[in-house]
Length: 146
Image (cartoon, rainbow, N blue to C red; front, side, top):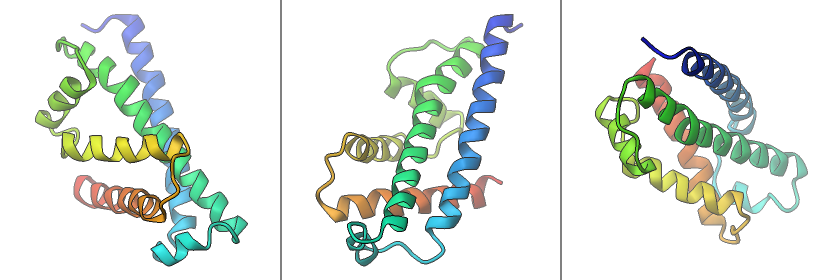
C-alpha cells in the first residue's frame, strides 16, 4: 500500500508532467511546421518569432526532462519500494522497466539541455542537435509508445 503523502505527491507530479507535455507539444507543433535546420538556426538573431519559439521549446523540453528525472522518477521508484540512489542508478532502473529507451540517450540530451539552459551555446550545431534531436525523440516516443 502506498503512503497517502506519496500518493498525493505522485498525483500532483502526474498532473505537472501532463501539463508540461501539453505545453511542449503545442510549442513543437508551432516550431516544426517546417523542418528545423542549421540554416534555420542561423536566422535566430534576426527572426524574433523563431527565436521565441526555440526558447520556448528549449525551456519546456528542459523543464519536462527535469520534472521527469529529478522528481517523478524517484517518487515512482519509492512507490515501487525500489532502492533510490544516484540519478544514473534511477535511470538504469527506468530503462530496465521500459520507462525510457536508453540511459545514455537521456544523459546526452541532459548534457545538451544543461548547455542550453545555462547559455553556453555559441555553436549553432549544438543548438541544432538539441532542438532537432529532442523533436525527433519526442516524435519517435509518441509513435512507438502510443
